[in-house]
Length: 100
Image (cartoon, rainbow, N blue to C red; front, side, top):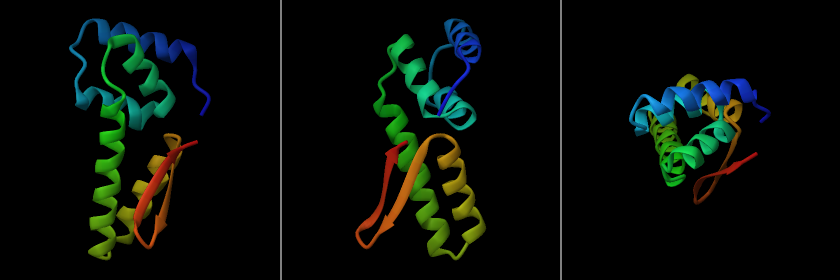
Protein backbone atom coordinates (compact mmCIF):
# COMPACT_ATOMS: atom_id res chain seq x y z
CA UNK A 1 0.00 0.00 0.00
CA UNK A 2 1.39 3.37 -0.99
CA UNK A 3 1.32 6.05 1.63
CA UNK A 4 1.77 9.76 1.71
CA UNK A 5 4.96 10.85 3.49
CA UNK A 6 3.21 14.01 4.71
CA UNK A 7 0.66 11.86 6.54
CA UNK A 8 3.47 9.83 8.11
CA UNK A 9 5.22 13.03 9.26
CA UNK A 10 1.99 14.34 10.79
CA UNK A 11 1.50 11.06 12.63
CA UNK A 12 5.10 11.16 13.91
CA UNK A 13 4.54 14.68 15.26
CA UNK A 14 1.33 13.55 16.93
CA UNK A 15 3.12 10.60 18.53
CA UNK A 16 5.80 12.91 19.98
CA UNK A 17 3.13 14.54 22.14
CA UNK A 18 1.24 11.42 23.16
CA UNK A 19 2.33 8.15 24.67
CA UNK A 20 2.12 5.49 21.98
CA UNK A 21 -0.32 2.83 23.00
CA UNK A 22 -2.16 -0.01 21.32
CA UNK A 23 -5.31 2.06 20.82
CA UNK A 24 -3.35 4.72 18.97
CA UNK A 25 -1.60 2.07 16.87
CA UNK A 26 -4.96 0.42 16.11
CA UNK A 27 -6.31 3.72 14.81
CA UNK A 28 -3.24 4.31 12.65
CA UNK A 29 -3.38 0.74 11.29
CA UNK A 30 -7.08 0.89 10.40
CA UNK A 31 -6.92 4.45 9.02
CA UNK A 32 -3.60 4.40 7.15
CA UNK A 33 -2.62 0.73 6.75
CA UNK A 34 0.09 -1.67 7.77
CA UNK A 35 3.01 0.20 6.22
CA UNK A 36 2.33 3.45 8.06
CA UNK A 37 1.74 1.59 11.35
CA UNK A 38 5.00 -0.27 10.79
CA UNK A 39 6.89 3.02 10.28
CA UNK A 40 5.31 4.43 13.43
CA UNK A 41 6.55 1.42 15.38
CA UNK A 42 10.05 1.89 13.99
CA UNK A 43 10.15 5.58 14.86
CA UNK A 44 8.72 5.25 18.37
CA UNK A 45 10.25 1.99 19.54
CA UNK A 46 6.89 0.24 19.82
CA UNK A 47 7.19 -3.44 18.98
CA UNK A 48 5.82 -4.54 15.61
CA UNK A 49 4.28 -7.51 17.43
CA UNK A 50 1.59 -5.06 18.54
CA UNK A 51 0.46 -4.71 14.91
CA UNK A 52 0.34 -8.50 14.58
CA UNK A 53 -1.70 -8.72 17.78
CA UNK A 54 -4.18 -6.18 16.39
CA UNK A 55 -4.53 -8.18 13.19
CA UNK A 56 -4.91 -11.46 15.11
CA UNK A 57 -7.63 -9.89 17.25
CA UNK A 58 -9.53 -8.64 14.20
CA UNK A 59 -9.25 -12.11 12.61
CA UNK A 60 -10.60 -13.65 15.83
CA UNK A 61 -13.52 -11.20 15.88
CA UNK A 62 -14.23 -12.07 12.25
CA UNK A 63 -14.25 -15.78 13.11
CA UNK A 64 -16.80 -15.19 15.88
CA UNK A 65 -18.93 -13.08 13.54
CA UNK A 66 -18.91 -15.89 10.97
CA UNK A 67 -19.83 -18.48 13.62
CA UNK A 68 -22.79 -16.30 14.61
CA UNK A 69 -23.76 -15.91 10.94
CA UNK A 70 -23.01 -12.17 11.05
CA UNK A 71 -21.60 -12.26 7.53
CA UNK A 72 -21.88 -8.52 6.91
CA UNK A 73 -19.59 -7.87 9.89
CA UNK A 74 -17.20 -10.67 8.85
CA UNK A 75 -17.02 -9.33 5.29
CA UNK A 76 -16.51 -5.79 6.57
CA UNK A 77 -13.53 -6.89 8.68
CA UNK A 78 -12.06 -8.72 5.66
CA UNK A 79 -12.47 -5.58 3.51
CA UNK A 80 -11.00 -3.31 6.21
CA UNK A 81 -7.98 -5.58 6.57
CA UNK A 82 -7.52 -5.69 2.81
CA UNK A 83 -7.66 -1.90 2.58
CA UNK A 84 -5.05 -1.77 5.37
CA UNK A 85 -2.74 -4.01 3.33
CA UNK A 86 -3.56 -7.39 4.87
CA UNK A 87 -4.88 -10.35 2.86
CA UNK A 88 -6.68 -13.06 4.81
CA UNK A 89 -7.30 -16.61 3.64
CA UNK A 90 -9.62 -19.13 5.24
CA UNK A 91 -8.30 -22.70 5.40
CA UNK A 92 -9.60 -25.88 6.97
CA UNK A 93 -7.17 -25.27 9.85
CA UNK A 94 -8.25 -21.68 10.43
CA UNK A 95 -7.62 -18.25 8.99
CA UNK A 96 -4.17 -17.10 7.96
CA UNK A 97 -3.12 -13.60 6.99
CA UNK A 98 -0.24 -12.00 5.17
CA UNK A 99 0.98 -8.51 4.44
CA UNK A 100 0.48 -7.42 0.82
